[in-house]
Structures are given as C-alpha cells and as structure tokens.
Amino acid sequence: MISWPLVILFGDSITQFAFEANGWGSALSSKLVRKCDVLNRGLSGYNTRWAKYILPKLITSAQAENTVALTIFFGANDCSLQDENPQQHVPLEEYTDNLKTMIHYLKSVGITPDKIILITPPPLHEASWEKQCILKGCKLNRHNNITGEYAKACTQVAQEYGADVVDLWNLMQEGSQDYTVYLSDGLHLSDEGNQFVESKLWPILEEKVGTLPFILPYWNDVDNENPESCLFSNTTKTED
Image 1 (cartoon, rainbow, N blue to C red):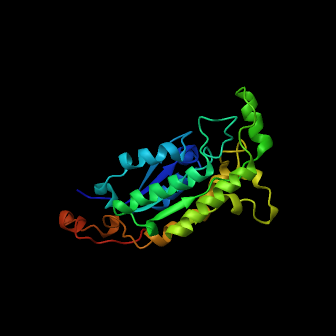
Image 2: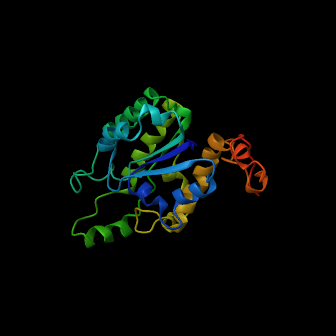
Image 3: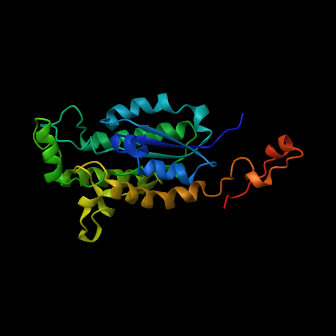
C-alpha cells in the first residue's frame, strides 16, 4: 500500500466548514496534494469537554505514526456565557485543562508538541452575532472580551508545551483593523477570514511538511518501457 502522511484538522464548526468553497482547509489540502492527506475532523458546536473524549477514538497509535501535523482549534463554543448557553459553555480553567489533556494524549501515542498547532478562537463581533442569536430566539450568548480570555489561555498552553499557536483573536484585531471583514455572521469565518487563517497557518505548516517528497513520480518521468519499476522507485520531483 502507498501511504500518504496525514495532516489532521481537529476542531469545532470553524474546522468543519474549512472544506467548503474558499475554506482554509481546502486551500491547505490543495497545497499539499500528492504530499499529504488533509483530514477534516471538525465537529460543529463541539467544545473541549467533549473533544478530549473523542480524540482517542479519532487518532490511535497506529494512525499517529503517519501523522506529520495536527491542528487543535477549539474555544469559540467553550467561551459561551454560562447563563445564556450552558450546553456549550466550558469554564476557562477547565478549557485550559482540556487542551492540556489532549496534548498529553497526543504525546502518549507519539505525536510530539512540535507537530501540534493550537489555534485560538477568532474575535467575536457582538452586534452581528446578536442578530443570529435573536433569530434563534435567544439573547447574545458570547462576548468578545471573554473570547479573548480563552484565546490567551490557548496561547499560554501552546507556549507551556512547546507547540505552535496561531493567535487569531489578536492577529485579526492587530492595529485596530476592522476584523468584521473576517467574519460572516460575527462568529464564523467569511471568505476573507478563511484566507486570513490559511495565510497565518501555512507558514507554520510548511516548516513541518515542506520537505516531504512528491508521492509517485512526475508524469513526464515515468518510463514507458518499464512503468512498474519506475513508479515504485521512490523517484520524486516537484511538479511545475
């Protein structure tokens, strides 16, 4: 069997939607075609309380051997207000512990912190998200400043364990820029937001997988006189 290395995207709806048109996940998959399989393991509406139980069922030690990078992208649901959204809310301290638990599990199966990329929740635009909440018959159930506290905790966990981190909450608001262009509804990503995530994530990911070979020879290098031997001779070439 020909085995493709794995890049696994683990997160909530922002990850689940990453393979939609113009999504950040599909952009990464396109860049890594013939080098890695990019697996989307996004779970819309999920938080770290549930994710820490699911992760061992998604990634076994056998699968971990072929995993070259993994993103953990939770927090947008965890930071929900307890009074308004108790189903998804996870207290800040527990959120922090849950991220650590997931990293410990990954280490136990051989996915070291240098292969892990944590991604913080993006900023929340309260006025836009409040409209969505009202349409669903509820009150505003998140605040941007609280989202920022979860983003800070995520960053601190990454630093503690030596993992990479993409701090979307700060990056999208850097220089007091209008971050609303990155959001489609105040919470989820717009096309511009997807492009932004991909642009910040790719340089980190490229360092981890950039030297991986092109799987199977470039078509013009296949020897028509002896194709079978040529195809499996480990010859690689970067496609023009």
